[in-house]
Amino acid sequence: MIGSGSKKQGSALLLALVTIVVLSALMVSFIFRLHLESELASQKRFGFKASSLAKGGQEYAKWMLVQSLKSDASETTELGEAHALALELLSSGVPLNNYSIKTEGGRIDLSILPENSWRNVNFLSDADWEQLLENNGVPSEHHAGLIAQFRDWTDANDQSLLLGAEEEDDFYQQRNLPVKNAPVTALEEIQFIKGFTPAICFGGTLEEHYNQPEIEVTGILPLLTVFGKEGVSLQSASKEVLMSLSGIREEQVDSLLEARMGIDGIPGTEDDGFQSLDQALASANLPRDLNNAFTLSDFSTVR
Image (cartoon, rainbow, N blue to C red; front, side, top):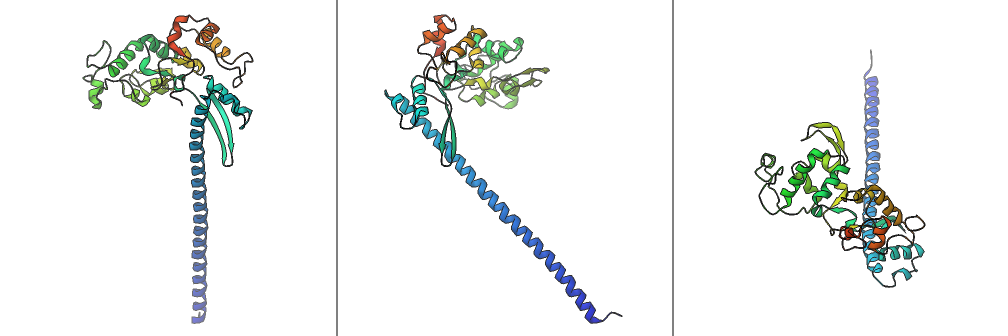
């Protein structure tokens, strides 16, 4: 027979064990919450620090552009030789690539490129479109349709071109999408145009719309912009961008890229860039009538 005292001792022990378990759970929860709040605070501090560095980099870039316009820009040496060289290159129309600025809070890697380092989509000729699409792997049977559909989206009238598409087209009717009939003002807008699938814009297979899953394309949007003027910058455009120009051969582009690095062949040194369009065209044996297709120095709109 178990006495009442033993029952009370057993109940007290059980209650003590439950209390210990509850207190342990509360303590673990408290410690986890402290750790979580500490982690969140750390992430918030890191985000604020990164945002401040990014904004500081933007302001520093603006300041450098202003400094580069001064006649004695290259003589500014109080911030070091690397800074003076960067200003000298900018004043010559040569873009800045991965210029590092060390601060107490971290490091800023700064690049300043004129927006005409890319092709302004609103200025592309039909021949340029053909070259651009071909270089990105789009089969030639789709070129005429894509060009006509782009023209119908951007022209000022409602008359549909042959192979084009205006607002009455089923593609736009099903999406309740009005045709803009004005120049493109944001690259994302191109995805609304008939035929310009995500694959055409960003790369992938032509399964959607074209039913050609075996064909893969690289995407045209990384080569385009809606800002800047018509001429392409010979000082900063990539090989892929330069190759999108109609009538230019790969060996000529390679010669341009080699010549703009100067005699030493090293980018980011004081002999970089071209002094004139004539010099640039001569370096690649390009005819002078291509002057209007290129520019050397235009930092009116930068990235």
